[in-house]
Image: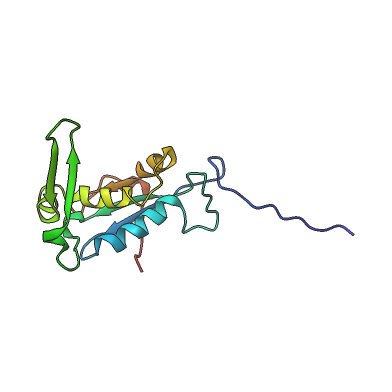
Length: 148
């Protein structure tokens, strides 16, 4: 008697067709939204998720300047940068960074949730964050992504 053997299908560049999603960040909590974005970038929302392959999708985030922080994080959370020189460490609150470069808040949060290797760096290239409500990726026909 012959048994049917089913082989697990792993995602790779030949059989992976990435999709495009758009997320409206208006009144969204930063951490909860970014965990969903990181999951989509990794491809964990698909049944063909493969940990060692870049099988995720593209994500466009609009209205990044309208994200919200819970509690006192807007005043108390700090972002550090270091130039590499002595005395080159700078500190900035979330409120100042949100006013100056709102895209960077979402990018830094998502980057910290991705793998710290060349695969994670490739995944990070598939996120596009914009402060306003317009984006130049309409030719890709992105579909809206629900965060619930």
